[in-house]
Length: 270
Image (cartoon, rainbow, N blue to C red; front, side):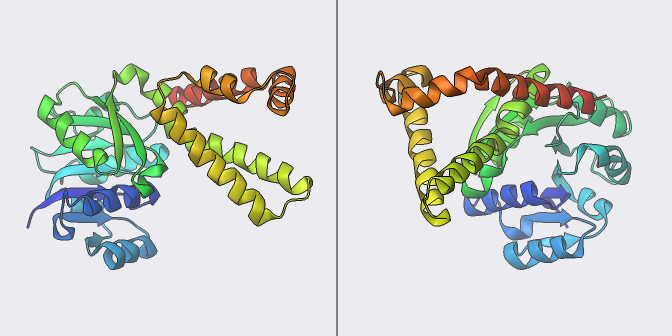
């Protein structure tokens, strides 16, 4: 019995990754095993994806060529104890835990000299095939290991490779980033309702505006500042809104918030 991908922690992000690799036919259901303590999560993976779902981490680790660590940073040390002795000596370990360094993973996996680890930071739009992931190799990961990790995440989005020293910045920007946009959408919808639009009308207007703006940002050669300038007529409504946000120091608040997220990532690594 051998699996191409063993998942430790069958949460929402692991679900997004599984959907991606199956939708892209990168792997078949019988090539994946997922471990989770929650019966509900095991049932979901078994029913929706047709993969083998087990309770014990060791049962997933011992037969998997690639081991995906998808547990919370605070739970990582305990999870590593359950797989360190069970995992195959030639397994590639891919971690998506924020603030968890490859050195930490290598050390807690028995201090093996050649433990191959790739650290990754995906985000939740992977659920729709629109994810953004950054990967960073550990000390012993090969170029082929990085390619193998990239293929997993490229099945549901775009991937870049960065130095591990930048992973906390990536986490603060794209890992947490969808929440920032959702937070802005919340406030826009609330304002729309206050002005008399229905909740349904407000959500439609805001969501379609966000989709269109994101598409323009992704596909245009113009910088964000130029795209904003093209919408902002002198003396018009957009200028009034932008000036108010600047007077309330919104740009500073946004930059400071992302730095705070990066700082929290660094704290988690300790």
